Every structure is written in C-alpha cells, then in structure tokens.
Length: 54
Image 1 (cartoon, rainbow, N blue to C red):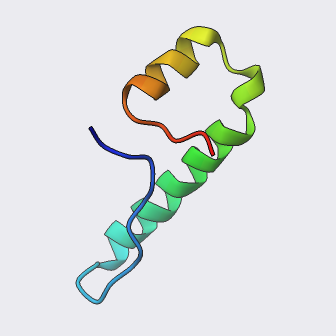
Image 2 (spheres, rainbow, N blue to C red):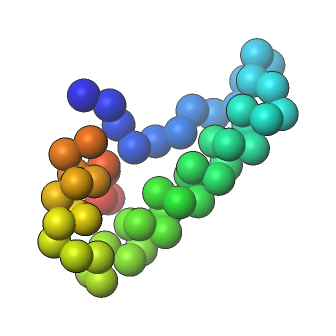
C-alpha cells in the first residue's frame, strides 16, 4: 500500500506539483497533530490508506 509522505522536490518537479506536495504535506501534518481529536472513523479511514501517525 502507499505511504503518507510527500516526495522531495526534484529538478523534474514543476512548480505546480511542488506547490501541491507542500499543501499535501501541510494537510498530513495537520491530521497528525489533530489525531487525538479526530473521530475513530476518520482515524480508521486514514490508517486504511496508509497514514503514518509518527
């Protein structure tokens, strides 16, 4: 299954992809920091798609 990390920028990454990776990384960080307040269903959904909580 997948993972919950975003790839580092590379010379082949265009500006739009880099911006999306930054936004995705911020969203993942927010979910991790709010893990204690997320519903059990949300935690299960995120875990099922490979969310790394640490």
